[in-house]
Length: 78
Ligand SMILES: [Zn+2]
Image (tube, rainbow, N blue to C red; front, side, top):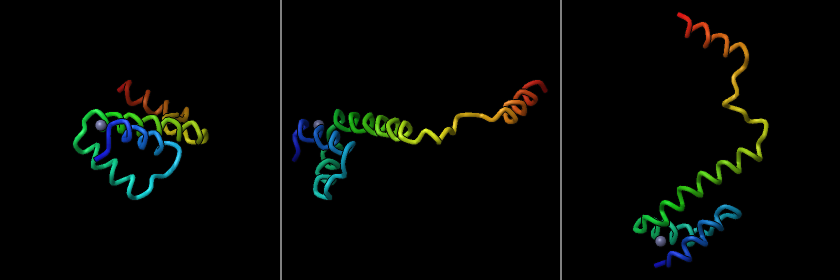
């Protein structure tokens, strides 16, 4: 069984490189029983997504076009 220190290392490693199948299984087994590392893994997933968003500046799903904004405003006025 992995120690928390080793599990944390694998979670951090996962952010920069792919884990080997063995490492993935070891990490999964550890996070299944360790809530602390499981929480840390979830947080690192969020960080990873933020980094991915920064790397893709074209993707702006939250940005509304001015037409769409007008549509929403009209609906609100009703
Ligand atoms: Zn742990």
